[in-house]
Length: 151
Image (cartoon, rainbow, N blue to C red; front, side, top):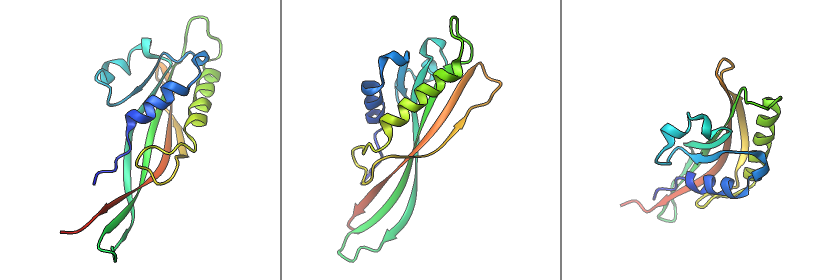
């Protein structure tokens, strides 16, 4: 049984719930058909991208009821991208911070399909300072449970 969290579901939630006044040009996902081209285009900035996930087994349950249960901690990455310099914009860092805050507000406590716990924020990191864009990578965590009957 594959219990991966749907990145598209998280993208759609953010797309539907982020305030249009933030001026986000695109809320996308690494699974979008045009991801490789779009993520690097300035017409997609500022942008929010649901990037990927990593699963780490927590501890197996030997399955005394005839079913094996494996709990897995899942981390999901969301990247916010804002142009470092934009015509008519004075403070791009403030813009980045507003978008990051909005993404966190719309993600914390949300329980995607297949998750057994709601998402919580575990870390964030800014991207390289020498780039023409400012990025912030946000890592959210939830938990899933794999269950199957051994054959």
